[in-house]
Structure formats: structure tokens, C-alpha cells
Image (tube, one colour):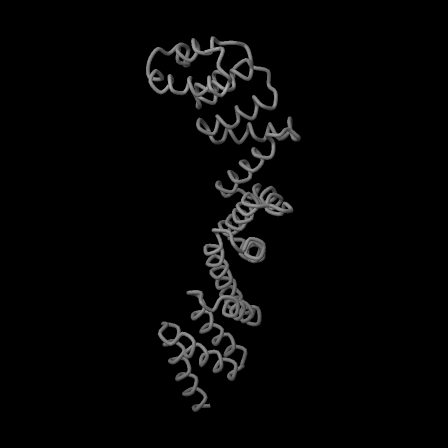
Length: 275
């Protein structure tokens, strides 16, 4: 086995390990693995074995190796399958000790996404940095979307709105586009309702109109148009309300919001007649 190139030795070991991993263990590491690689002190061989074994076994193989960048990065990666919090701490330590190592960028991305998955605000800055990388492809798009999702999950709708708009502008062909558009519409509608409830009717109207104009095919558009009419009415703009409700009935005639608009127009005519 020692005469085989390193990748071939790793493949051969993997095949043997598949059949022998369940028996003949020595100190938590399968005896067959020790025999195949002879427990040579070569760090590269030890890292290959650690990758093949994975998990706790792989981590045990790394014990005692000099803590260079390659070993530290592999330790952090293997730790993900053992303890997520420990893996995060190892990634943080790697960033401090080996910030310019070739493995740093991948671990930095993993740390940022893990923080986002946990809903932690600490993930926002690194995600924004990753998403803003010039010429960024799939990784930049993933970071941009993860940042927007993290902001949404934390209820920071006003901050999420421009990030979603920027994401859609910069990555128009990304697979997340449909979800990002839906999230943008939901966030804008909620911001409009919050502004309406707070008495900021002009801001509410701006959000409603922006939603309808940007994405008239959105499921939220008819409801936004109806509520925009209510905001116009509250602003004493009866003509604006009437115009919005007429347009609503014409553009989305079968929607529930159109029925509500018809009823609202009838009510306002009665109120106006009484006045």
C-alpha cells in the first residue's frame, strides 16, 4: 500500500474501511486503518486518514500533529459532525491564527452561514462582506440571500428590504429569485401595515404603491392595492381611494381584495351621501 500514490491509498483505505469499520477497534480508531497506513508520522498521510474516517475517529488521528493551517482547518471541518458549537469555536480560532491561509476563505463562509442558521446577528457583517465581493458568483449570491433571510428572521424588515432589492438586482438569474421576490413583497406589505398602524399614512401608501408597481403578479398585490385605497381615504384623498379601488377591480377582478374594494366603494358612497 505504501507504494501507491496518496489519493489511491486513500481510496483503497476507504474501501477497506467500509467493510472493517465495525470491528477490530484500537483506541477508537479501527486497527485496520492503522495497519494500512502504518501510523506513519507524515502529517499529510494522517490528514488523509482523518478525512476517510471522519467524525471522532478522524479527529483522534489528528491528535498530536503540529497545529499548522491544514491540520487546524481539517480539525474544524471534522468537528462539524461532532459538535457544532465546538466547530464554530475552532473556526473562530482559525481566523485569528491563520487569517491569510488558503483554507481561511472557505471556513469564513461556513462560519458566516452557520451564524445565520442560528439566527445570530454576528453573522450579518461577514455575510454582507461575502455578498459584496466583486465578481462574486454562487457563493456571493448565497451569502447575499442568507443575509436577507437573517434580517427577516430577526424582524428587521426595514433593513431587509434594501438587501432583498439589492439581491434581486445583482443576482437576477439566481435560483433564490422567486423566494426573494416573495419575501420582498411580504416585507413591504408588513412595513406598510406597520406604518399605517403607527399613523404614518404617507409612508404606508408609498410601500403599498411600490409593491403593486414592482410586482403586479404578486399574490400580495391585490391586497396591497385595497389597503392603499384605505390609506388614501384616511388621508382625505377620496379620489385617490376611488381610483385605486377601480384599478383593483379591473386588474384582479376575481380576487378577494376586489370584492372588499367593491364593498368599500359602496360604503364610502353612502357615507359621502350622508355628509
